[in-house]
Length: 267
Image 1 (tube, rainbow, N blue to C red):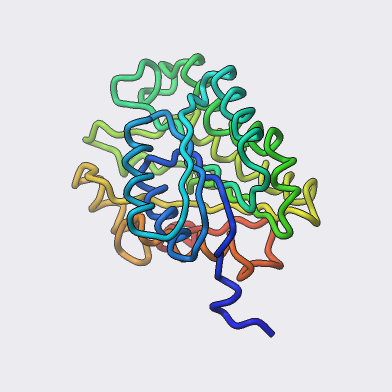
Image 2: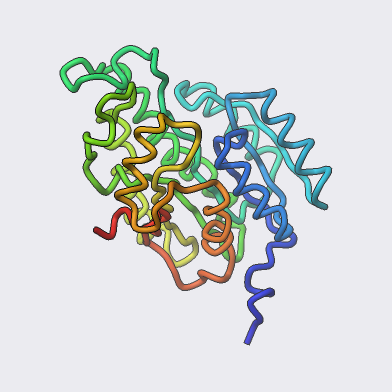
């Protein structure tokens, strides 16, 4: 019987993280690099990718490949995937982490229901739902070369629960319908892929609660009061779960939604 350290060891493995220059990807890439995994990072932020590559390779004995890609542009996405197929021979895991989260100034995004834009809706679904499907479909030949490959889709509590608008009262924050629809779809795509790609490839979701990142303090106080663990999450809270789902620690787990939300969804 293998030891825990052997089951979680990722030495010699290689995996891809979309949204690789972001905050959540930093925690995930550090955790996976610590276990020995080589990484492929994809993001629209080229400068951020270069910095992330330099930082990881200076701290861990791994290699990091980076690719710039706009998931809202199908030609850019296809070119990126074709390049990866030419340059790499195997993938042991894919983490679909890139997300369309909008900005306060984006037209028809974080506004009243009747003012939410269909064009913005389409862009959100393209990045948050279509891109994860397309990347797995495109890079399936590389996943099939692995002896034990894994896909992790990063979803949200708003993919499984409705919003509580009392949290946002008096703030400039909100809860766009497109984000909820895309993350809910991602949870169902996880279930669909888990049976479609079995038994060769495992597919699971991480369902994230609110991550502390300088939100309006009124919102934070309300959110924490409704959370059993009485705090918002941090990027570090994701590290253990991502190593678990990528590695052989979860070798008999597929089609599941693992909530990292401080108990928010338990009420």
